[in-house]
Image (tube, rainbow, N blue to C red; front, side):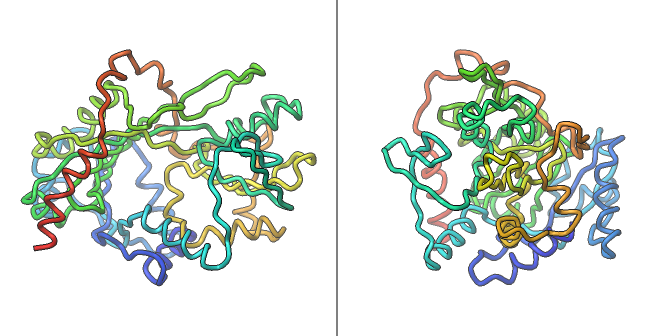
Length: 383
């Protein structure tokens, strides 16, 4: 919690990062019987400041421009609002930081990795280093696999035990010009453990995220199981997931907007740990004593973009980040029990079980659709 607050301060003060695209703060609609929001607020109080405010369900419908007037609250036990939180354009911020790194002398190379250690690329280039930092998210197991095979590691010693590749299905719906005006006061809306709806930084899209994640398990040539995003366009989303996004989140949270057209869908992938803590550590195997990892974002690490780097540098240079962070971010050994913080979002479904042959029919250029939807708002802004 303290780390997130420090990051929040830097988001707002850094000259390189974009300012909040929206400073209304999220509204969390807690499911009946869930203690998640109570635990979050306990964490706020433990640090001496709880910014969240209770909203009586009977009063919710008339607030924030009336956007919750038709929301299905039958499974909602409580609602609260955090006015101190904001919404940022993570893509723009990442580009800003990359530009800053290059300005400071970082050499930025791109390529497909054929083997991790040493760093062989598919085009024949080779990279070596005294220390290798792997920040590959959901692709970590696939990059580590050949190294682990070469070292004849058993399943308990492989990275797959630390985190799995998890995918959230995300839908984007088009908003008309009047919608953009009507939703000016719209906060990010978290709908229990099901998902959230938030306005896109681009203004004319509504983003719907389904927290019921999926994974994609494969068996390697060495007969080890690992999870990895499928090797295809991530805008190919099973129709069953598209329908699920709409039925359990969009239709229930904002039924007045469900006639808006779906523009594009995608599967967003990350490495998810059981505790939703990061893995920022040196690899424990002495044969890989120059390999370090910074992974396990669990779909919430982007908020730490302004300040997580210094903690990674501490690990690279052998400096402690304090007992709590060292423990939480360490490589978990086989005999260590890991507490699942948000078990409902941990993947329990295989992507292949949700697919059928019709999901791959009639794929077309969704980028053209996105540009076509963006054009009216751009014109409105220019005027």
